[in-house]
Length: 178
Image (cartoon, rainbow, N blue to C red; front, side):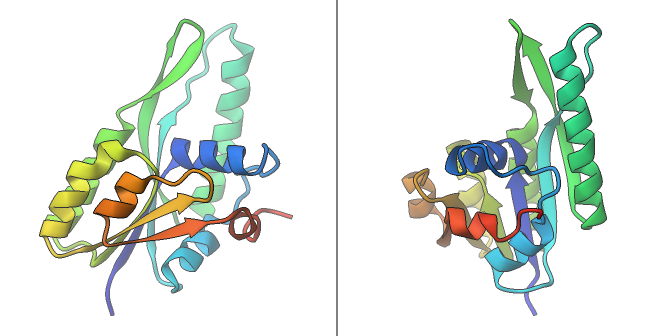
């Protein structure tokens, strides 16, 4: 049986689901494992979730709320057996900017392909910065599946991956907490 890896670009996933659902689906208690099985069409999948780690800044109430919410998310992911890999969030001019996540995803995609850590790779992200890593992965004869979202489709990823799966709002809703 082939080995399947699904990688979630956490920030990208969060923003797409937020837009698609008009902010009505909360992801801290979401069933990522069931969604991953749905995406791959099988129960046995390895899942990695990449996201910038939120830090609490003294006197910044927003950072404290975001930190607490992210810790709930991490607890939920760990309960489901999802591996978490962290970048960081840099605060600049009162806004948070994610750093180090895309590079980590790209390195893991390529390393996994070269070291035969998977046969099929599903990328839950619409980030075209990952195209060079995808090309190398395909050169290693691995199947690369782009997982996008209706109304937010990356045609560059569709055209450069082995295949694709587009998630609808109905698909996303199936795995939200009750």
